[in-house]
Length: 61
Image 1 (cartoon, one colour):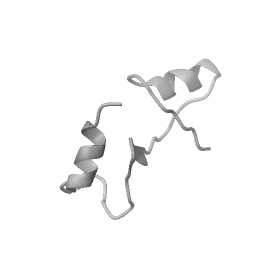
Image 2 (spheres, helix red, strand yellow; image 1 turned 60 degrees about the vertical axis):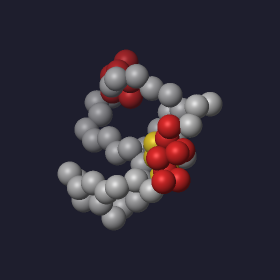
Image 3 (cartoon, one colour; image 1 turned 90 degrees about the vertical axis):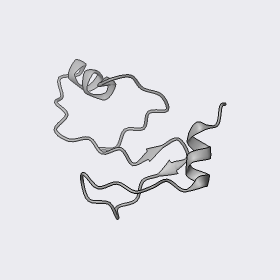
Image 4 (cartoon, helix red, strand yellow; image 1 turned 135 degrees about the vertical axis):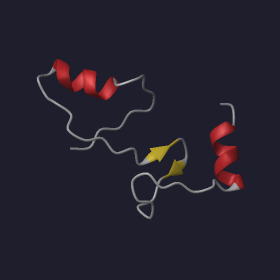
């Protein structure tokens, strides 16, 4: 199942699904703002942001 939120609070997905009797087993964030997260990083790995990515995350609406 895929769920898209445009804005969320701490554990919002888990609380929403629990209210309907479902349990969240695993979550995967695939996008933050305009920045899409690729599959090249293993869990726990990180990488530096490009200048464009940093600007898109810190830009005020």
